[in-house]
Image (cartoon, rainbow, N blue to C red):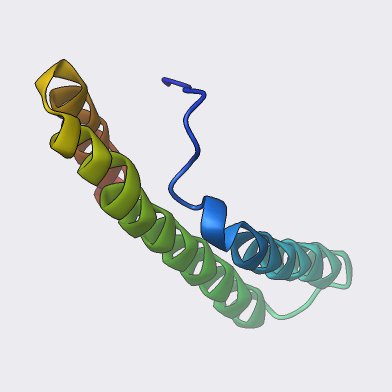
Length: 99
């Protein structure tokens, strides 16, 4: 995983992404409570599906911001950086599709 000192694509929406993550955190804590209290299996699975969709939605937002910020800037600059950013984006998409 490559790290860089450049400003991330989600920097402008950081607070929104943190809010989403807090909601997801709450969903996962709720799942923990459901299992502790022996909640019906299908109800737990429904909540797992909701948490999974929330994480997928966050991933898509971050991917979109990465493409429109990081990849676009790299393409504008050209050279090896553009190829690297395109490969990173392609790999990230492949991971999302597999999950």
